[in-house]
Image (cartoon, rainbow, N blue to C red; front, side, top):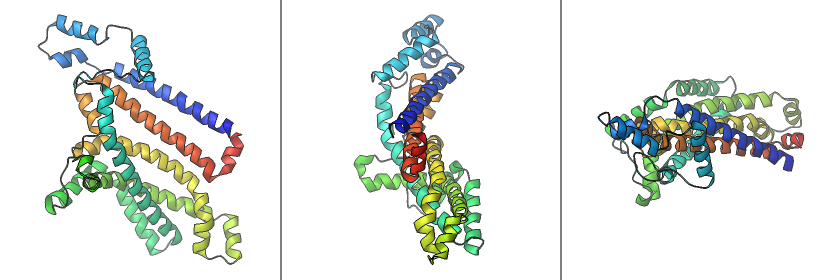
Length: 316
């Protein structure tokens, strides 16, 4: 078990280091001078050069990368060029919105996918199966930003059941905040739920063709009993893989959906920071999202060992 955990932890750290390097390198290639963006196009060259030196852009890239990572390891965050506050404060205030939104969307995705996937697999090649697969194909084809606009038009403009955007804050009450996140969560969950439903159905059908399932049926167990007692757990391993990747997609999808619904989360922050050329905020938020994705995949690897001990035993 210790070898299994060590390998997964080492992979986690190496992946995170590589993500930080790629993030820093990508931002280095962005055109434009942050100092010129801050001061405006009418600023004098001397003022732009002075601000560039103050922000450290006159130093070598490797030195700025080392100082950035060293500061993060010590819990020190630079100040945003635009907001003039430490980046961690910006991330903290928006993380409590984006993460609940992604988790809410993942819960809806899982419920939607498992119910429809199990229903379709239990009625293979019957009308119920065909109907579920048809709806799931439609869900995959719909872009989440377009669905978000449709949800606003229908439920906010036409019916008036929800506000068209914004977030009242958790201080306004749990249910009020959850209500504000419902439409964005549905917009995010529809596409991912459709994909997961199809994958769940395929995984269940593949396991149902195994010999041990036929043996269980021969012993007198009903089709439903075999499905819930034997098939579902064995089919979960590839499904969990997809779920881990989907949560990463949901976090990335918040960048678009949060802007459609004007929700002040990490997605909206990074979108605004890119427009303002606020590199300090962009790189810290991107690395934060990358760390969340890598951590989720790390947890998925650990969950593998719980679902199928053979994977853990193989690594040992």
